[in-house]
Image (tube, rainbow, N blue to C red; front, side, top):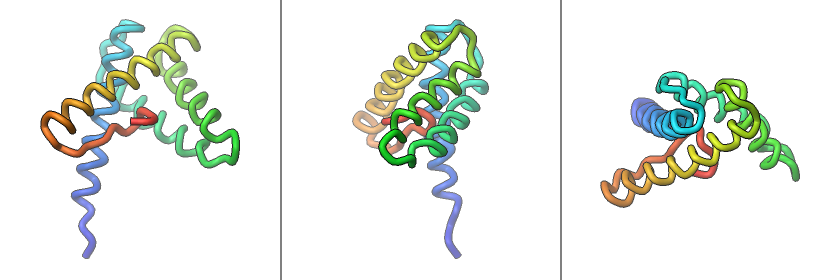
Length: 116
């Protein structure tokens, strides 16, 4: 029997890390202080990315626009605020992953933040 607990735990940890990056960014940029909202945003953003990134030639650009659209839909502000949240979330995810993977050698990823 194939074990699903390990992959599920890895997915959950990666989702929580992606949510933490979006939470930190949204708190800084939009003043929204709700971690569960950020985790749901990370999940929806990952789904939007997955639904659009496979399209030939334009997929990566459409996926990035879809991901920022999800942030724009979930947080107040507008497209500029959503893009700023996305950029800061990306840097935050890189920082979190650096500490977890380089310092503590955990080998985890961030789900819901593209390119991390």
